[in-house]
Length: 108
Image 1 (tube, one colour):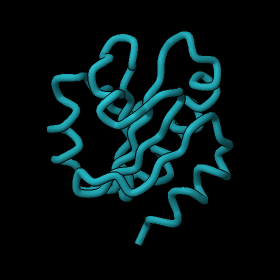
Image 2 (cartoon, helix red, strand yellow):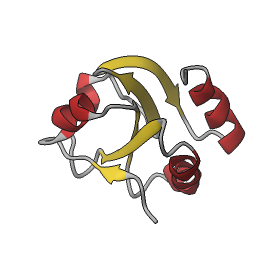
Image 3 (cartoon, helix red, strand yellow):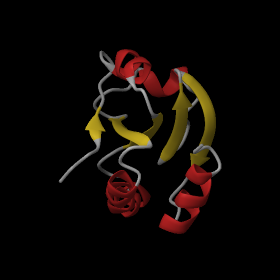
Image 4 (spheres, helix red, strand yellow):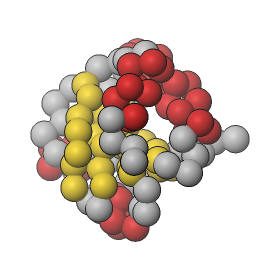
């Protein structure tokens, strides 16, 4: 079951603000091979961290206005938010283990 929510330029700020959990946003594009590698890892993480983290994806090709606001210059870029504030950033494809380590630093 897909637990990752697609964002748009129009709903980005609202969805991030409404999230009660830690919020991970994946900035990606269809042509990005590292993004394709990261995608199934994010699906697994979404299942494993179901009650702790909400995961969103924003396709920067379809919705180009948000990425520059957060200085996203390369993809994949992961931004971790809490209460609409950025806690941390990861750029590039990472392993599931690396992503778990990254997230576990912020889970209470």
